[in-house]
Image 1 (spheres, each protein chain N blue to C red):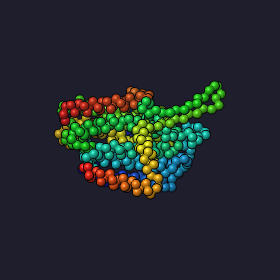
Image 2: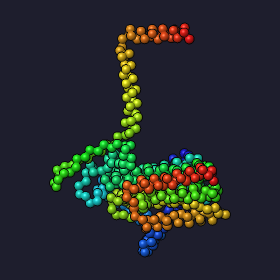
Image 3: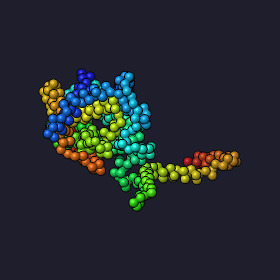
Image 4: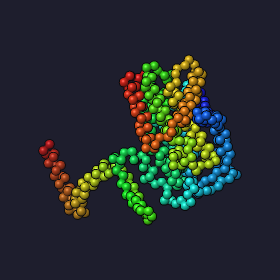
Length: 139
Length: 302
C-alpha cells in the first residue's frame, strides 16, 4: 500500500521534471486569461465558492434552502442590478446549532456556582462530604 | 508479469482515442484523422513552448503533472484482461476511485486558479456531475467485488472467476450502468461534447482551456489514459472465458476497441443532454446498478 503513495510522488516529480526539461530554452510567454474576447475582465467576474457549489446544490432545493437576494434590472435603461446568493449548511442549521445552543444554555445556568468566593467553595466541599457520608450510611 | 499490464495501457491509450475519432468520422461520411493522430499531437505539443496566464500561479502550472501522475498511479491497480496488475490489495477499489478523483481535483484547482469565469463554470459542472456519478460507480464496483468475493479490482474484474453462467442479467445491467458512468466521467456525449467550440457548452474542455505546450500534452494523455481505464473495466465486465491467456488477452483488446467504437457511435447518433437532465441520467445509471446488485444478492453469489 505504501507503494501507491511512493509511486504517486515519484510520478509527479518525474513529470514536473520532464516539463521543466522540455521548457528550457523555449518560448514561455505570458498572456491574459481567455475571456472569449471580452476586453475588460475583472476579479469580480470569476466563480466564487457559492457559484461553484450551485449546480450540485440546486438538485435538492427543499433540503438546501438557498437564500437569494435579487434586484432585477428595470426599464429600458436600467441603472443597476444586484444578486446575492447564500447557501447555508442544513446540518449546521438544524443539528449542530440547536445542540450547541442547548449545551451552552445548561452551562450558562451553572455559571452562578462560580463566583470566586472561597467560603462558597468550602461550602460545596462540605456539602459533597455530607452527601457522600449519607450515601455510605444509607447504602 | 505485473509490469506488463500498465505498459499496455500507457502504449495503447491514444490509439483508443484514434478509434473513437475514426468511428465518428466514418459514421459522418468523412475519412477523418488517422488512427495514430493523437500520438502525433502529443509529440507536437511536447515540442512547443508555453503561454501562461498572468493571473495563474504554481497551482495552474503543476496541475497537469499531478493529474497525469494520479491517473498513472490508478493504472497500477488495473487488470488488463488476464494480465495481473502490479499492485493489488483488498480495498484497492476505493483507492482507485479516489486516485481518479485526485486527478480531477488537480484539474479543477488549476482551472479555478486562472480566475476565468468559463473555467470556474466548467469546474463546478464537472465537480457536480462526478459527485452524482459516484453512487453508480461504487454500486457497480462494489457489487462485483461482493459477488466475486474479493474487494480488489483484480479479484472483481480479472482472474479466473470472471465470467460465471447464471449471472448474465446482473452483468448486463452492470455493464449498461458502467457504460453510462464511462460516458459521464470521460466527458463524452451525452454529458459533454468534446468537439464543441462554444465555451458555454463545454465542461471538461473549458477547464483545460488555458493550458498549452507540454501541460496540454499531459492533459490530453491523461484523458486518454482515463478513457482506457474505464474501457478496460467495461470490457473486463463482459469478457468471456477462453482456453488460453493469450486468446483472452486478445479478446480483451478487441473488447476495448469495441468500447471505443460504441462511444464513437453514441457520439455520432446523439446530441448532448440539457445540463438539467444530467442528474436524471446519472440517477438512471445508479438505478440500473442498484437493480443489478439486487439481482446478485437475490440469486446468491455467481
